[in-house]
Length: 397
Image (cartoon, rainbow, N blue to C red; front, side, top):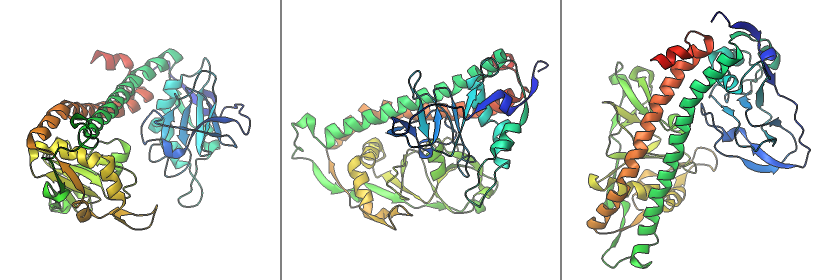
């Protein structure tokens, strides 16, 4: 670390660089709601008319300046544009860009995710409760030790490799989910293998005949020293990975889950949240904002999971909600058991389960690998960015 030098943030990072984008121009837009917490890549964008907002190019880092978005980890690296293309987004973004010959774009992204910049930015926030914003002047004046450019590049490359693998696994999982649903729709909605008509020996039955809802609960305070594998709404929204936390830190009752169950959110079901718990520890629980389903025949779990994952079930869920639109709507669990499903013979269900089993197994494998990769990245990031650990020490392990 003897070559690292004390630098001022504004001398190392080009904050909110000037870009030209005429008002009325159609361009790619990234709203704050598009970013996922602690996820590097921007998952989606829209094409809209530019009338103001932050402007950026590929390679720039977008960091939320407003609470609670910054605290929640909304920081991303732009990679959705073509060479020379300018995009725009929320006025609540701070744009960070490398300075030629001084800093590296990957290093800057991880710097923005590290305590070095992130925690000081959060502490600089001022404003009314719930609308606090980072003070740009304070951000400019933050001082930290930075390595030479070649070492920045190596640090950025090391951390980027982990995020690249996470992104690749996520893309594969999205494809696997689409494949499983396409097969389900072909067989059990469009009846394509049977000439587009439901076979006469199939029955249409309510979901409650083949599935049950479990409400078996655990009071975390009854086992305060136990580490719980917690499937929560925020955990799903952030990473689709459970959080492992001490039971004493969880204040409300939770539903018990196991490998034969699957979860769907009853809270604001317009945002679809469906989860197959991994149960990689002894004690797995979920928020009571989930409905916990179990197939009465565990061998047919993949088929009934696909039923609940289908668009028809989502539409049914949305038609059976209570609460104000856009507020705290909740689906009514007992009503879902009346959802009608076309039930084929056991032989056909088992054929389907055999066909999709490998996809669901790979989905779980990729999710669990992402859990380990995130843990590794989050462990390495602060140590590499502060010089406590060198890239050579990482590669030697």
